[in-house]
View (cartoon, rainbow, N blue to C red):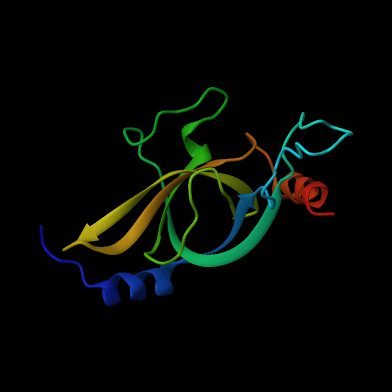
Length: 144
């Protein structure tokens, strides 16, 4: 397989990339279920904290043979993101672009001589035919 120059990949992403806002989820606590509380006694959902960042990625539609379509979704609900090696959404993070919120599916790394050249992530709309407005209202609930 021929080598891919990192500078060439980065220039393609910079020249053709779409601005992506990335939302990383974390529990924000060493004790996410609040097990020491005498009110909840550790039951309930862990408190989520969203940290946002951004990066550029080349966005491409998914081909029918690349993705298993989940119930309630259609092929147009999926996209592939190609981004620089050091940018980093991971599985189950959220990204927003094109006025839509997307969930990141498992990522893949393109290696060349043991060096990461770029990464690829498949993303799916967070809500079928949902909008960024729904996501932003949800974010306000998580980070008041």
